[in-house]
Image (cartoon, rainbow, N blue to C red; front, side, top):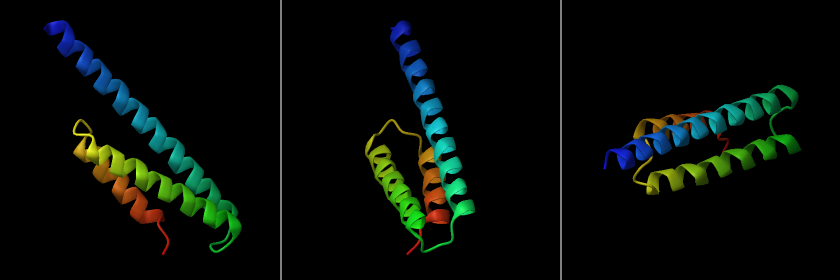
Length: 85
């Protein structure tokens, strides 16, 4: 039983690290795009596409009962910062 609990904790840590890395890559991509282009250009639509994809991932994480509520909240705040109407 202890081995199973240890595996669950290891899998949880790995998942959290993966999500943190994905967030890091997203932040770099979005900030790089914003630095290069003005809003309303073709690259701005790519940024919006990235934000929309991130929203889909957040919805999936919210459906997964194992996801961290804190992490989901942080992702939602990130999306709010870069989401353009």
